Each structure stands twice: as structure tokens, then as C-alpha cells.
Image 1 (cartoon, rainbow, N blue to C red):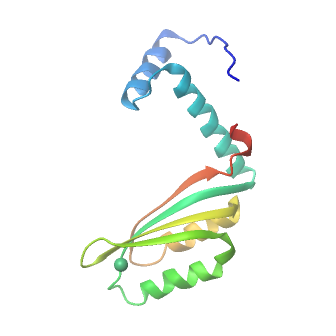
Image 2 (cartoon, rainbow, N blue to C red):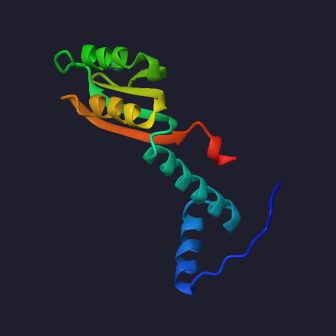
Length: 136
Ligand code: NI
């Protein structure tokens, strides 16, 4: 059930917010505010080391010596945290690996750090999400 409440904002802040709504393609202020609130709760869950979900994205050159083996080895060390892995051969050199993870926030962050810091990983990112308990 949706409930209404009103918000007071300084004019400047509201103008900035309306710009944000436009650039992020929201239909209205309510949906944008709902997303911002949820996002802040997701961040809190990560900070509190709760059960979280996330997506690790890696781009690397598979010609880099032993990198492919190391990426696989680290994932086996954390196999309880990995839901699925998708590997895409982007071009002759580059691979894209997308890893869906779940578990304690600190451990998931450790896994992401270990993968992203491997020599030869050109781009790495951890998108933090949540199991959703606090988002309903
Ligand atoms: Ni590949």
C-alpha cells in the first residue's frame, strides 16, 4: 500500500533534484525518492555486514600469463558466495566476466577486491545490492 506524505525542500535543492529526475528518466518525483531511499538502505546493509547480493564485473586480457587460472582459483576459494558466473569473449584479447555473488558483505567485498586487484584485470566493479529484506 502506498502512503502519501509531503516534503519541504529549499528551492535550489528541488531544482537540482528535478534535474536529476530528468537525467535519470524518472516519470515522477515519488519514484525517484523511493529509489534513493532504497539505495540508502542497501548501503546500510553493506555497512552493517548483513547478507547482501552483488554483481562483480571484470574485464581482462586472457593472454595475460595465468590470469584466467587465477580468476578461476579465487572463485573456487569463495564458491559458497558465488551464485553464477557468465564469461563473454569480447574480442580477440578481452574477456568480460560477470559474477553474481551473495553472502556477508565483508566477505563479498573481499572476494571482489581479490579479483579486481589481480594483475591484468583492466576494469573491475562491484555493484552492491541487497537480498531485499529492508526494501519492501
Ligand atoms: Ni574469454
